[in-house]
Amino acid sequence: MKKRDLRVPWIAILAGLLAGGGLVCGLWLRVQFFRSFPDPIPTQDAWGYLTGAFGLLQKGQFDLFAQRTPGFPLIVWLTLTVSGSFAALNIVNGILTFLAGVAVAYVAGVFGGPSRPPAALAFAFVVVHPHILYWEHFLQTEGSFQAFFTLALCAIALAVLRTTPRHAAAAGVLTAIAVLIRPQGMFLTPLMLLAIAWAGRRLGRRKLLWLLVAAAAGPLLLLGGWSARNKVVHGFFGLSNLGPFQAFGVSARWIDLESPLLAEDKALISDSIRRYQTMPENLDFVLYEQDGPGYLIDRKYASDLNRRDEVYSALAREAILHHPVAFVERGLNTTYEMLFFKWAKSKGEFAFRDDQGAVWFATVEHPVEFATNALWDQQWDYLDREFSVNEYRAARDQATYTIMSRRLIFDGYLRPVLAWETPFIRGSLIITLIALLSLPWLRGPRRLVVALSGVSVIMLALTAGFLSWAEQRYLSTLHGGAALMGALAVTGLVERLLPRMRWLKRLCSARWRRRRTQRLVWR
Image (cartoon, rainbow, N blue to C red; front, side, top):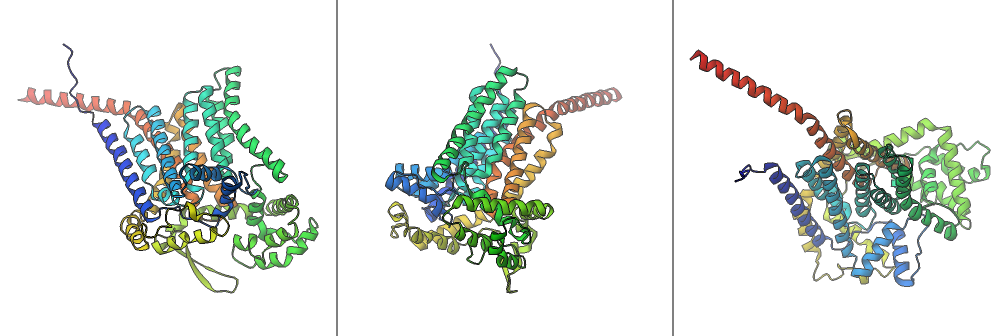
């Protein structure tokens, strides 16, 4: 008769408890947030995305601004078409986050073996992260982009481990979807191709070529197809014309007004630029204020938007090339403020002076007060002037979702959880640092995936810092990659150190046996 193994699988039990706890806690938190804000909270940027969604709903035409990519508007359109309610968008974002967490845990399990606590801990970290939880409930790209970017990283990791055309194609498609939601992730496309090429370098030229063709098919069809559509509709080939706008915004203060290049346009904005050079950095002034240089250029070329973008690009290129040190310093400083400024000061506040010399205080932490979020919630009234959004709203029935009940739920359940956002963000950054420091001790595909995830997290922070300002919502995209690389780094280190630990255990056992023998002899 075969002897039964009566050992208790403590590691599997621990992993199950971690994953189950994360699942229950994540579901409970999202239910409470849904009860407090059943509809997603709109922001000023929501108008640009709803243009495409309601164009499809009402006219069957995808009327989308040239600045926007189609990923998020299509998610909104599909959600409203299937469910008839904006409230379902919160549920969709939650499902996407859970799928991203499952993908991280699965990849960590595949690399590190089954029933590993790091994989379960990575899943729990993703689904209960307060920062992800908060931005899931906005009518903005954060909820879907962070999930698809994490799914793309996991698909690339599987393609690196199992170098087949099928896995490479899946990685390419998910990467393209993430880019179509937010072009900020465009850098992942070449990183994906480089990682797959490196992983399949020993397969032979023909197999490697098929791998790269499969990986590039998704980006070529989806990104190339959308770029071709913009060429037909808007007259330019590319994902979006937001790039020239952003580059001009971050480089406006360095424009050399005495240069003969674009002299007519520089004369138009000269007074505005001189004023801005005496002010603290304020991208809203550059791009949106009526006295700002961006508004003046936009008004001049209102009938020729492609020429406007050419002027934006030329001015930004000249400013950056003539002042590269200032540009790099500005980008790194903005990235630092976004990542660390919120806890560099007590209470998370910093002071600045406006152009009249008055001192103002601001904070980069998101407001955890119900009143502030309820004010954002009132943006629905503004949106309803352009789109019939109220017929899709769950919260319009105030008898079911009264303000008082929503406030009590938010203050009672969500505020204590959101207060942990800063430690969680700090934890993501610490995990990233530890994983990068562990690279010399990792081997094979695991090292490549950890390096890829680390570069991706760093690039997400730098692209936001160099092309935008220190908005905290850009941090929500970092945590899935941090969880993936942390789980892989921990399992890799354990596998590396485990043989040494067994050798140490055998050594200790041998010493214990010798000492016991000596005691018996002495007796």
